[in-house]
Image 1 (spheres, rainbow, N blue to C red):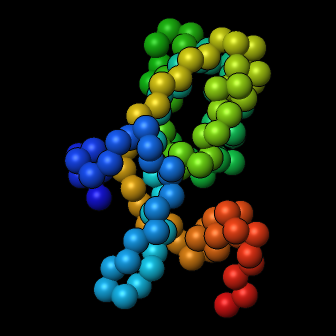
Image 2: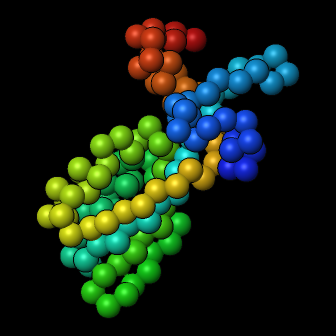
Length: 126
């Protein structure tokens, strides 16, 4: 599902980040992925990259511009809750970031079970 298809069907502000769909009698979970860009000083890049890795982000590109670095990444929206505060703390307020809705992807079974457990307090046993 592309961003254009999502925009036609629902308001971006009402997207919860996780949707359950039925396709050929199978249920699967879709995660909302956001593309984002972080600009920070070179000395903070290691900490930023480590944090992105912990948030299941895919690093798409890293660019150098003098002493600043720009990191382009793709991450599940659910992992970005409170990210601006964390980024400010990590970089002593010297980083900026912007985020846009990118796409939806099917979540693997392990991650799907974690989402269901978190939302319902029910642990999948199969």
